[in-house]
Image (cartoon, rainbow, N blue to C red; front, top):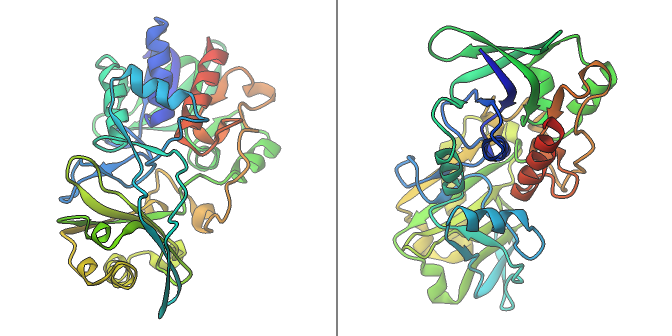
Length: 357
């Protein structure tokens, strides 16, 4: 199988790169290890199937991120502002909650109706059948006189080899170095440098509690919460304009401590929501937990240390030496301006496609 350009990964970066190549009339294929598109973008419902609750990225900021609002307009998607009207609750200790009437500042963040996965669904719908191969995990890249030979392990069916002139890899650099072998090997300095790049969200877990109604608003609360206690450290109103009432939160418990403890985490999280928002929080319709640190297609052992600040991204666009011009990094961690954000995924994809064509 030959394609001019092989894209590794069908997350936002990979699908956007495919869209750009499709519009340019280029020959390409997208190879995705998972049985679904989206990567770290995942939106679920109360039953755990596709729904409106974002378990990965949720927000974008049109005031200073130009690509995301442009893309959602082109795709005809509906957006709405993050709800933040009302007081913010700060949990200083297990017995002390402080109510701040000023609430959280309006930072202009927007969300997508139906969940962020609606963006992924719309991008995937524009790509012709056969261009995206799900359940196809890239295991090795080997240089040939004509380009690159890509070894692919298929989840079902025989393994395949794809020949390509150029490979655009949208995997996080750390994951790439630890899951794909190279011939010739990557220079050790490159391997070390890429391994040191933290994968955004890889050490994170998100918790969502779905309710029959947004009861916190009755008490003049915004649904915004911060805590020094945990297990939830940052809480937001995840309700939408179609009747979904939900609270979403980032889990502060380190990855090693929460592995295999979803039931305990659920109980502790609900108890905390009761402390912050009152007795009605005790009875959610459903709870969802997504621990990205437990996903081998996202996280490695190096990601078990939680991130306490936004990493410096954007210094790892392509390797030097023998792989220069043949292998191009195009994931969000490679974006020079908005690395780690959905805007960065689009930025990096644009740069990778420009370099490949």
